[in-house]
Length: 288
Image (cartoon, rainbow, N blue to C red; front, side, top):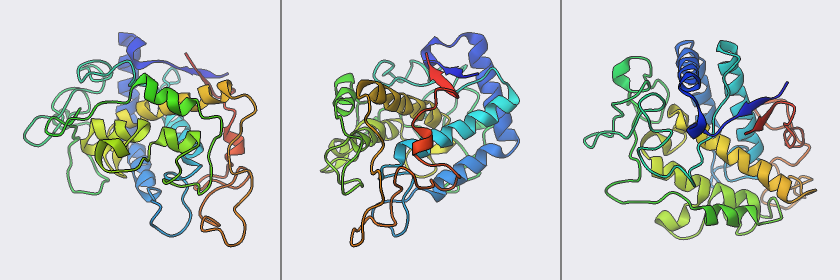
């Protein structure tokens, strides 16, 4: 039976408590750090050689959909009533609204070193030591809104611009594409600074701290953010009936993307699944 993902701002106190308890248990068991390691491993950019599956590629959405399902399965092994809530950053836009409450994810990092000092994921609580990352830091960091160089969360209209595109993705299937729903949602733009970060990407920058880079999974908000991104894929599918994941077939000989991206019916590493198999997840979960 399909379970439900809810808007984080609608969770009851009991639901928040169960969610936090399950997350901390997955961390205690050592499973959570495996997810961090996996994301670091698959954080591959356009400029690197080899296959890209998680970022700057058509499979950005199905890869993170499966990634999120795997984390959710780990949570539900702890407590079958728990699912991943989503953070609607077009509605909850302040550093004090959900999910930045003391009983959920805690708040912003302190000014001196960006260390998160409140909530159950604060280093001082003793339950959330960072063990995998691109630095040796052991505590969770955030810089909500970037006080020294302010940046705003994406707006409803900016998100709507992505949802309006009727084509899933287009050649050259990377971060330089200017059309296609996938990159408009993933958010690789032209220029430098905030103008180059749109939708998904700008949210990572707005949270700052641990959420910037391959080890962004260290901040639990990663999952709530990606649940909302995943919801947009579902909404796009509903809006553009019949539109499918692209490319349908692998790029031909001579293409720079040949062997570098995953076509609709090809396997999506590290799992034995295809993008095609992840287009309909209605039997697994739904959104409230």
